[in-house]
Image (cartoon, rainbow, N blue to C red; front, top):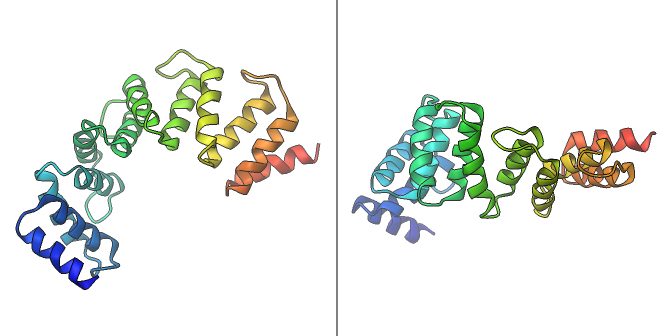
Amino acid sequence: MEKAVSLIEKSAQQGHAHAQFYLGLFYAQGEIKSKNINKAVDFFKKSAQKDDTDAQFYLGLLYKNGNGVPQDFSKANLYFEKAARKGFYPAQYELGLLYLHGLGVERDFHQAKNLLEKAAQQDCDLAMVDLGMLYFYGLGVRQSYAKAKKLFEKASQHNNNEAQLLLGELYERGLGVKKNDTIAKEWYGKSCDNGNQSGCNSYRRLHLR
């Protein structure tokens, strides 16, 4: 491991973008190198300037969360956009959330839908859930419980407990499907088994009826 780290450090000093990204990651995580977020940001920026997608994405996360840098949604947007343009679905998802909530950008449900859709098409279950919610409420799209259900079902295949909870709600309330407490309870149970407390609460509530 020491030899590999030494090679990465040498490569980073020679200006190789992805080596600089990895060195930044080592400093950010504090497992291989002593944690130093300032050094991490410095190496991420050097790498991002050379158009490294991973570095651009991680810088976006740091600015979004205010981790080691002042929270700045505009800068987060800038870095996520650079990575998203290259089809990097985690950046497309994060950028979609910024547009969805109007953070660092003007709130735009249509743009959020486009970005979340691109990420969902690359099998991002988190994007599937948020895209499904746009259809659930009709935000930037024609309202459709059927499309929301389809997206929640696809996300649930990844054991996404939020999608499972929402499927339970659709069946309990009869939204886009025939009302069925038995199926609702099954979905709430799956959500609970995967760590969603709201799923547990809903399961118990139906069980006591």
